[in-house]
Amino acid sequence: MKYESSRGKYHSVTAAEAIKMGISPDGGLFVPESIPHLDDKQLTAMASSSYQEKAFHIIRQFLSDFSDDEIKSCINGAYNQKSFDNERIAPLVKLDTGVYIQELWHGPTAAFKDMALQMLPHLLTISAHKTGEKAEIVILVATSGDTGKAALEGFKDVEGTKIIVFYPDEGVSEIQKRQMLTQEGNNVYVAAVSGNFDDAQNGVKRIFANEEFAARLLQNGQKLSSANSINWGRLLPQIVYYVAAYLDLKAAGIVEEAQSVNIVVPTGNFGNILAAYYASRMGIPIKRLICASNANNILTDFIHSGIYDRQRKFEKTISPSMDILISSNLERLLFEVTGHNASRVAAWMEDLKDRGRYEVDAVTRDAVQDIFWADFCSDEETLTAIRQTWREHSYLLDTHTAVAVNVYQKYRSETGDNTISIIASTASPFKFANSVAQAVLEPELLQGKDEFELMNLLSQYTGIAIPVGLKELDRREIRHHSVCSQQGMEEMVMSFLQLV
Ligand SMILES: *Cc1c(COP(=O)(O)O)cnc(C)c1O
Image (cartoon, rainbow, N blue to C red; front, side):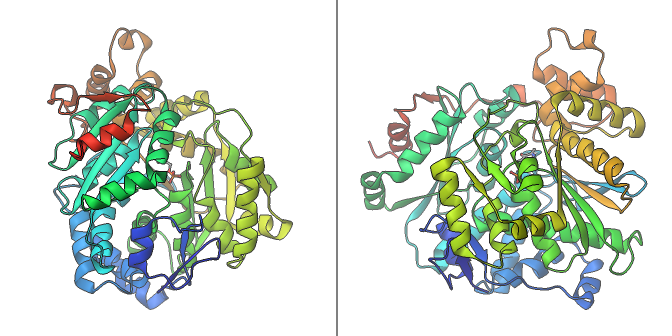
């Protein structure tokens, strides 16, 4: 299995090279040259196996340059009882007749980013080794919340790596901040950057673009790399849980041979829902992929019209991990639905860069609409979805999953489609305790309480246990104290790496 760039200049790249490079040098994203097919016999054989065995069977088809032992060590390093608090890893829970929630947040940081970031460090270190890389890998991350903590947990104490996370002083929640500041591990560094997420992100981009800096690092035996979601090594582990969800329904006799399901995904960067698309291309019968957005509804507009226009206001919502205007992974979908037409994809991405918008042709738009359905949800509707779901089903949703539930309701009432549906749940409700408490508790109970107190209150009221990774967060030792300005980020990296 080889990989190629979605912008056409790179072909026949091994999986190890694609994962090590992260992004293709022509600016494109690495995509498998063909998609392996799981036939009925293979699906039946997998149906009764463990999550780890399913992962092995699926992942090895994409990593033909990895040995079976290497793949197993990646899987066992990621999905084990030390890191996940549910032995089924990504369990399905019945919400209503024909509606299932897939909980993707049983990893160490209580958000779905763990599903990929628990595995990426293992994929990356093996890839580096395979491609003859001698340098130590220094992962540099700017985070608006969930990614930073999940990357820290994934890379902590992984040999041959260091990880440095910058978060915007004004841009993350109290819980997210505390999760990062209490991070343990002997190769982890965290610093607050004064400003917002863009400031932190621009600072990181500047460091990546600084060749002099790279040369200096290399002299020190180190190389910068990124853990962001355009890396194929982050997408691949996500395909597994969609196949697993379908097989779980099949094993339970809820779906029959070749019966289709819908999958509903709260979407930001388009990574998670794209993994579901790949699962469908591998042979999982999926009728509709339902793309749920918050007020940043650029993807809803795109799926309806074929026009992607980023010239709009950025909205701050209560589902912050979906507050995004550039959904990078959409490029991979366009490459797939145009039959790998790299020159067309490159032209659209050029338009996006130069003019802030692009418009795909009618054939491409129709091909997208053949499988995708999209809508969006306001903050008010998000809170209502949390409240109603708690009242009617005693199931507590986080704000992101609530967006998906609301959009799924809209889908049902507009189409009347009763197909069995799986809703991807991307975070524990306790991770966004402020908004969830506001939705389900009486207003007088909330007064004067901070986010940690609300988390405890929510747990007492609902009888649901707080995930280990979030429990007593406010009592853990703060281990990171660094603060810098955007201009000071480079110096901060040097001091972390003891280059000064
Ligand atoms: C990252 C994230 C999302 C969005 O996922 P994409 O792959 O970027 O579309 C949704 N919900 C939560 C909780 C997240 O952390």
